[in-house]
Image 1 (cartoon, one colour):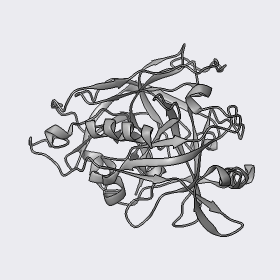
Image 2 (cartoon, rainbow, N blue to C red):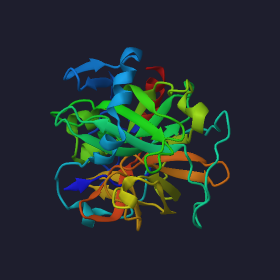
Image 3 (cartoon, rainbow, N blue to C red):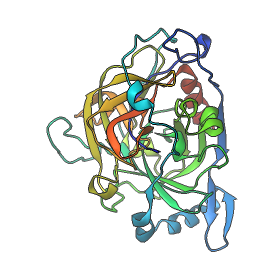
Length: 345
């Protein structure tokens, strides 16, 4: 069984037919993305609605302190442990032009506490996600981060943190809480308005092909104070395209095996390329972050001063009960197209 882990990535271009195999051939991949209005479940009526400003109170009342405390990490389904022996460095191929979004400071500076050597700024651009799985009716948690865009309302996370994959549907009552800490919401709550993830995640789920597309962007409503998320806390930049799998990364997430998922954790170090059934992933070793870390960003060029970096990938998977290495999809060029589309949803 696989569980959420962490990773970071760059993109592969549609013009080159998708990720490169070790033998130089191409793997199957779709560059399409799928969008939906974020649904809301009203427990009082036992019914689902499309999200709107009219049912925002339903979501706000749904996430009580008790319900948030009971939420558990989302897990991916069992596949195979073959990935354990396939993690290896391969010569990256040219996969299209690199594209970059610069980071953005918040409108009002955010005070952030000091921490340990390595990362001294626990940036509130990162935060925790809560949602209800429409298939099993249970509540779950993930990690995420605000990403800069024209709308200043976007959040980046893992695909499995917005959609359950084949045979399932979009998650309900989805909220992002930047800087979440032991139940405290220092910047309020940002409810999802629309979701967008890669079609390969929706159609193939927890397979190598699905995990290769396990990334999502969420357009959010303003918080209860009327502020957009990037205005409130800032937004990381984004890098897609190019050939870079190996770089120095800072990863932020809420792993349940650390402080019960109630506190933001950080891990930093050099990434490496790994291959799972010919699909390339970016991985990092030694963090030991378990479930709940899904969707947390791996950042290049992270600044302790600003609390900002550039997202190269998001946490996707690791082997169950073995968090020694975590992995995320290499964000191919189609992820740029999805980002642009999501900002216009």
